Length: 191
Image 1 (cartoon, helix red, strand yellow):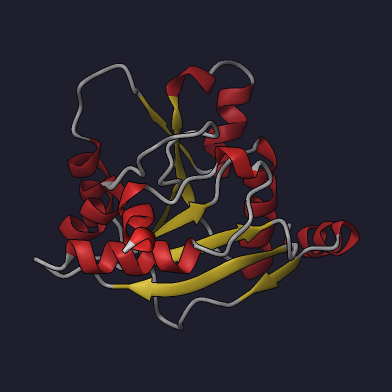
Image 2 (cartoon, rainbow, N blue to C red):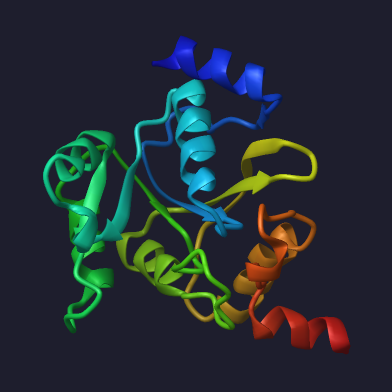
């Protein structure tokens, strides 16, 4: 799959930037901006090229035959968004049960405009004691890949979340009108 991904990305004109540090086997990878289904395809191709096996959270409504089987093979973890469940605890427990796990989360939570980034990725990483890696897609530059790595530390949420948002400030979404860096970031720009 790696060779095929390299060929497809090259044909599409996309570059993959960055790599994982050696020995890093457990982490949360946030992926932003997320405004199009094409983001998933470009992201998967980049992960295959980099040799990263990832899992991803996806709404359970998509797990119907035959799509559900394909999603599970690709690493899909069904999420029931209509039920009150503790997804943070559930994913943190997945990390405890395995020696290797990479979970991709889109902090926007949807491809549509969302005024607030979801912060669950940070709280999962904090609870599981794993780093957050900033994965990105930039349609203006036709680049995707791996950015900074953050190790959540108690009491530093606001500072670390602002650093994460700073990294994404210059990334261009496929549909820019649907991309939001969250009100925290916009408020900081005003000051």
